[in-house]
Amino acid sequence: VQLVESGGGLVRPGGSLRLSCAATGFTSGHWTIGWFRQAPGKEREGVACISSDGSTYYADSVKGRSAISRDYAKSIVYLQMYSLKPEDTADYHCAADFQATVQSMCVWGEFFAWGQGTQVTVSS
Image (cartoon, rainbow, N blue to C red; front, side):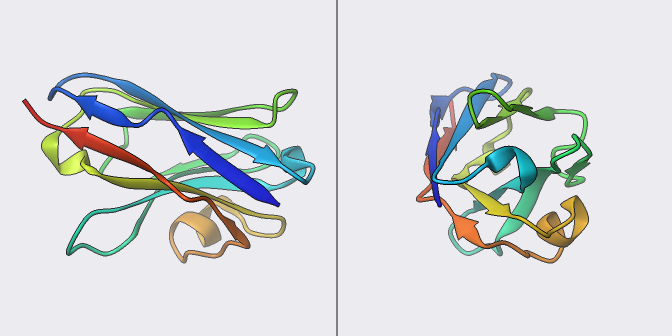
């Protein structure tokens, strides 16, 4: 089970970014996949999660400014983020679990696999 994130970088406030999480070594379409972020000095936060049937969960901090989606054929989960703010600056990681719900993953941090992360910096 391997998760590889990409798409991070430097973006100006108000800009947008799309993160990708490529899953290999397992049939990711059957798993719940989620995006987490962690900034220095802050607790890890479950940003958005998507289940195998497409149910989604978003943290209040990104609700209305982000969209999680998955390409079952490519085994990739995307996190599109809009109207980015400096407080969105963090390391973004994706996670996967076969049994977790979107709530148990995003809210309670239930996951089996964890990616190495991609850095997002929002700054002018």
